[in-house]
Every structure is written in structure tokens, then in C-alpha cells.
Length: 285
Image (cartoon, rainbow, N blue to C red; front, top):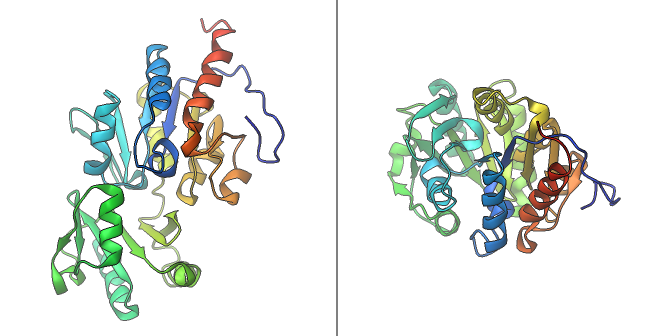
């Protein structure tokens, strides 16, 4: 494995007790599946007593099937940290929704600017009407959108997040627009090029992961976080060991201690195997 400067990085003998992993373009390969090697590495980590969490921008209902395939009985960090909910029990441990007044301002602005908008409330995906953007999102997430027409622009419930999708060439401008117009009212990030994620200030994967870890009496220094996109930077930057995928954005790699292989080359498994090998060589007491 290599650090952000391309130098070989030997994992320290820090004991890792919790691993938090992004899903899309990280745990999942290009076929939106968990590879056999990733599956086995995660099982081996869990058998060694390490807590494994999924930390994703996805909806809970979209992430849960993968957690169940991995036989996880841990909280899922969904909606970039706006919801933490048990993978098996469905118990809600933590919620941090967007204020309804802010949501209404966002919806008014999206309508004015003609931005394609997805509204997430009650673990449902609400849109005005289906189009190429919604079809693409459904293909990735496995969750069909619910068309509600003009009702989309009437905020009746606090959302976990609002997602804007744009053409790639319009993405940077849209990001800048939201950061300037909603400064102090929203946290703006991205999970994929063309996907602009809007959350209540202070909502991110790292804050949710810390809350889950505290429940297991695990310190931040004992956490490893793995991801590829802008919305993964807070957890990668602050974790004891932050890992960027080989296919990660450059800014993500700059904030990582380790750069592993790509999502199509079992990068998650490689870094977990390395951690386990190092920890087997020390007295974990």
C-alpha cells in the first residue's frame, strides 16, 4: 500500500478496533457488488473482534441489503451520517435531519434554477418526475423513485438530505451556488461527480462514526475509515488510519494516510488484510 505521495506505507502497530467503509466505488466494485475477497477479509476482521460499519451517503433501505449479505449486526451510517440505524434491528440510534424551513428554501431555489432534485424523507426517495437522472440513480441504488409532481416543492417533512444531480460541466457552478447562497445553513458535499449532497450543518460520516464508536468504547485513534469521494474526507482525515481507494479523487488521497488499490482490485480487502497481519504480530492484550 502507498501513501498520498506514492510512497510505500507500512501500517503502524496501532490497534484498530473499528473499520468504517464507504459503499459505492469503495466496498462495491464496478458491477455494484461485494467481491469474494472483500467479503472474506471483512469476515476475518469481524472474527478477530473488529467492528465493521457501512458508512454511506445512500438511504438506509438501499444499504441494508448489503449489510445483511455481510451478516453485520451493527448500526448503518446512512445519508452521510444523518441517520444511524441498526442493520438487523432497524433501531434508530441517531438522527440529524435538515430543518424544514431550510429544506423549503432549498426546494424553492432548485425550482427556480431548474435543478433535478431528490428529496429523502422517511427513507423514501421523492422526485418531481422520472428522467435520465432518476433512472441512473435507481440503477446504482436499487431503489425506485416516487414521483409526486409539484408536491415535491412543498416541504412537509424534515429530510435526511436533498440531492441535486447535474451534468458534469455544470457541477462546479452548482456547488459554488449552493455554498454561497446557503452558507451557514447547509453542509455541501459530493458522493460522486455530478451528485451534490445537501445536509444540515455538522452532518457528516465522521461525526456519526464517532458516536457509534463511543457506544463500543472505541477511541477515534482506534478507527480505520475507507472511502473514495469528497463526502468521505471528514472520516478519512480524522480517523486513526484514513484510507483512500486507488480510484479516489485526488483531494481524498491528499487527506489519507494510506492509498490502497481500486474498488475493482479489492482495495478494501488489501488494506484490511494488511491491518490484520500487523495486528497479529503485536500483543493485543
